[in-house]
Length: 128
Image (cartoon, rainbow, N blue to C red; front, side, top):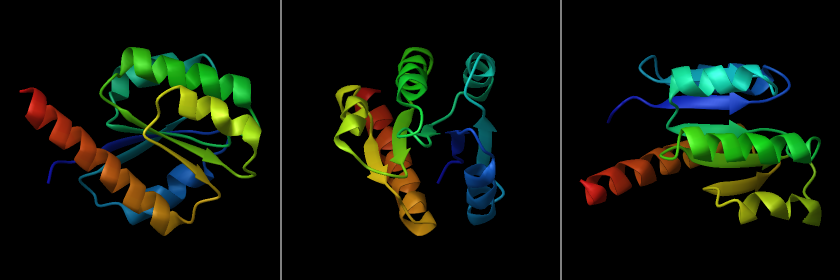
């Protein structure tokens, strides 16, 4: 299986740190804080999976981040996380993300990252 680059967009570094401990050394888990620096991280990292964290706390920023990912890394699978799920989170589904999860546990999130990577691999095979 090929290595996976996972980008975590979060106002804190906690999620990246916990995911880094769960993935193998061949995988890369990196993070970006919301804001202007995200653009350069997306261009440099070219992630296969992007996790947009805490969309419920910052819906406008999350919406912009998802749009940037889809524009700059169209092959990336986006997983959106909400700590407190509500109807207001529906905007992320409308943006065509891979998955929306409310308050996931780490094990569930790791399974979703592997599913997103597998989906990207299958799509790459089918389009080549």
